[in-house]
Image (cartoon, rainbow, N blue to C red; front, top):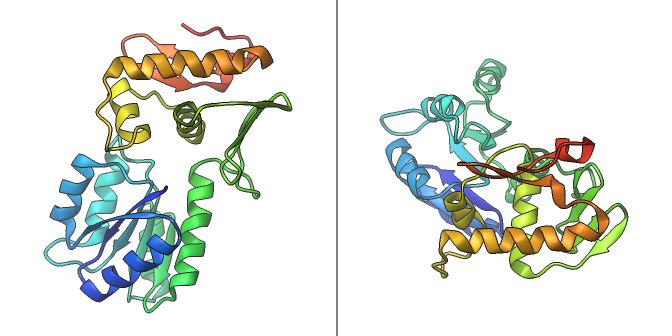
Length: 235
């Protein structure tokens, strides 16, 4: 379930989007201003941020600039929401790192389409919505995995782990981060749980030769590294 952070000071818009996102099977986090958004971001990492430009005290543009300078959050896609329809303002938002720009008033169906398109691009999905890295393919719509054209049978946890790593290929994640992003918040697993799931995931991928793409980075965590399929072994 994609997690969307809405930073918007108008309560009716928050209520409308909470309903629309829920119908689209997305979880919504919310903040009425930039300080509140910072507090939310300290606790959760959203898959996408809907960011109003005109906010009390600090503008959304300030938060956008902060995000793009933050090594841990600079890759979170951001869609700007604003009542300012001028071309100059739109260019300013895009130049500061916004991934898309939606002018108020907007229709929820249009915004949902924009969100899904930006999420596909951010996750490296192709036009069919599939995630690919070399010979490894994950189809989120069917929860199906293939390696070198062969179906791979994964348990629910190993599937979520692979989908997350493939959606963020090339980035190292600590065990703690993977627990936050992959495991349900209702569970309280230990960091060694990640190691166990990584071993199970590699074992499932091994018959088709994709296990080396899940690489251990000593002292840091794990990464899905496409370079391993071109002759690099895992650490």
